[in-house]
Length: 395
Length: 208
Image (cartoon, rainbow over all chains, first blue to last red; front, side, top):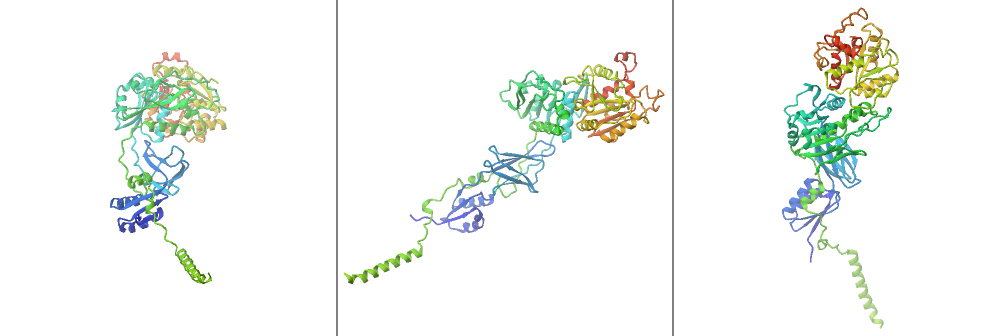
């Protein structure tokens, strides 16, 4: 059976062949040999040819890469970029302004947090380009810090303020006397992103806390705050007896050095985030549309004041990450990709053209007979005939 | 040194420095602790501590009280720790026991603070410190300011170094060290408790 005419092109040549292929008769096979996935526009063009009746196939092993980006709940407008690529691949990330970072992907992918991303994010993994739009910065809402007047509440509030979070603080000082900074009520997600309770004074907010969390707000129960009765249904677990390791006079104090309340009897949907030898120090769970983080540490301020060099920065970053993990973020409008590469190029290619298919054997054109070989055969035949005639008389 | 095991209570700490008479008001800590316990529900340790400024453990007490009559010259270790203390969010309360702006304590302490941290500036009398618990129109006057010693002035303002909108160093020429240096039980003889401003100091330090 005679094969159909075949036109084939590699990744680099395909762009310039598209016009020609578009004018080709529909019985011509069009085949792309791909080392990397072409730009989405080329893939879409090929898909259009396929839909218009051309037989379009592709083969090769383009790398499976993908990227997504998400605005974080961070007053500095941080963006998290998640990258998937074959393990060991080096990926360079750029935005519309400059190179953002480069990273080597491990088996679980790679994540980069950058304080600023402009325009379109483009990744390059060994020549395979892929992209994602930079998300719009999230507008952060206030963080409520509530507790008795103490170093713990004071340093949490001041660290978040130093990081740029708007903070509403309420510290109980004496019967009927609270020191307040801002007003807590009404407690809803239009004003407040998360509540941090450092002790059981959160009971004064009653059932408003649960309503707030179920509607999407975040809640951090630090230290003994997990004992408050009005948040019992929100706890990620129960609190065990506080550990009290001995601290030597010369010890540098870090997070948990002076002990913590272990989170025990984890809720069915509770997730352990930090486990120490004495028990679970941090656990989390989802409640309704909100998130709850239960932290056993009750004197984290000592880490800031008495830790090693840079501890005040580490402390500030840690608390900012804690808040970001639970803070309410309104759903952002989907950002429009305005780049020349897909977020997941191989998935886009398969979605548009189907899986890779090698060319059918009958469609592979046989190589034309070599003219020199043909000439040689003719010469041998002529020589044979001439010899036959010449040698006939010798018998 | 009067260190205690690590607890979550507020601990009143007196700063010990090498150059002067840091212990010139020995009754003051107990009196202030009594005042805090009397007016507030702040968990306060029943006794205070004395912490050398040259020892890293001074960082365990984010409010430090420093006083004296004699010249103040920090050693290198003291200077390094005080700088770190302030940068990490501590509050240093310095009171001139001489209540004398021409005195050696005032001159040397203000120089040392300027050298170690930043120059002092006048604190406005409507600063939140003066309404943190009790309401004051400014720093309350002491009975010692016009006692014939010192500069015989009523000092209308306190001085401060502020960082990020918070007081990092508070400097007083009011001589609260004399005013509050008595046994707590003697408060019953006073018509108005003259240590109430100390509550503002502690509440401000713990909440601002």
